[in-house]
Image 1 (cartoon, rainbow, N blue to C red):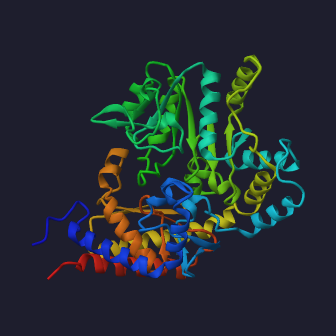
Image 2 (image 1 turned 90 degrees about the vertical axis):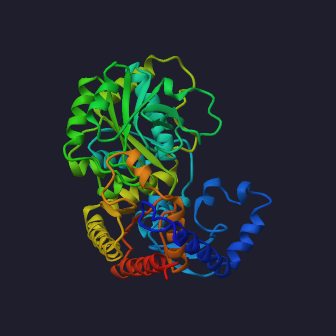
Length: 460
């Protein structure tokens, strides 16, 4: 007798059976990846360069031989259609030609000097044009950029408190790892090694709850609200109509500042979600895809905020500020950003990406409906996601409740074994300039076949 259906509409034993079979298939198909994983195990903690590389659904790490455009080739020679794209780092495709050329040219002329080149001025001008904010600084990652922005804004405002949304993720910035549990703020249990009580200086509310936002800002001690304009790291959570217009009014009335982390929502277009939807943040952070896959990030300030930040720096004692690293804005990164901003972050490049993503989203909805599953599909520009709930979640708590890690792993591994790669942490897919209609159809056909197998598994 089958156990009751989960909220996903699929019985647990069906998921377990598919996952076991696909794990065995993966092990049989990937002897070179197994050999490389075994070789790495004695030297690398957890057997991988970074521990979360084990968070994929694979029994051992898949090893890459090369990646080009929308295709990733693994160590065993399997060509995979890549809809993960480095979790947005390769949103413009793997090794895009303009960036590859710029890097090769710059590598002959220097890698890092701790001094600016002409690219610095050009990149600053281009960022201002794209995002509508006049003053910019750089970092190696979006995590660093978020961390630096928090320092600048706390210094500029004299306020210590940060406000984030429940279920958010802004890289590995410790301050944001505060969740709501039964309506109360708690430090995330998974955060390793943190010895300070983050709830003393971080407030957390649910996304799309204007009353909660206003109440949390009412004491007048919040330096800034740090948010993705669309939550993307707990599954996608879209803002409700009119939410950001009213939220911006509340934030300004309370004397706080709005920082939008556009690292993932850059999929919305050349100026990110804020420019596409008319938002007016005080600061913007963008990383990952900004350099076509090179480690780099940038953050921009309004003129008024930049003046306050510069005044705070000039008034501070001399010495280390805690902002910036030696390799920040190195010559390679600046060359990569210049190439990306001029040749990839254009409406002409984004338009076909968005059209193909719409085709993918519509196709996923049709496949899900054909199998009678209570799932939904959301899209932000070139980014598409399916979630195990009938309606798109309106906040982080609802998005988390819809998740099913075992079902995700079974689906992702089954797709991988059939030549399609999607993001491992939830069900996100990206379309890049090299993605074709045939690639999208391959994903849809494969997804349909896997769901047919999954829904039939264990039936009489």
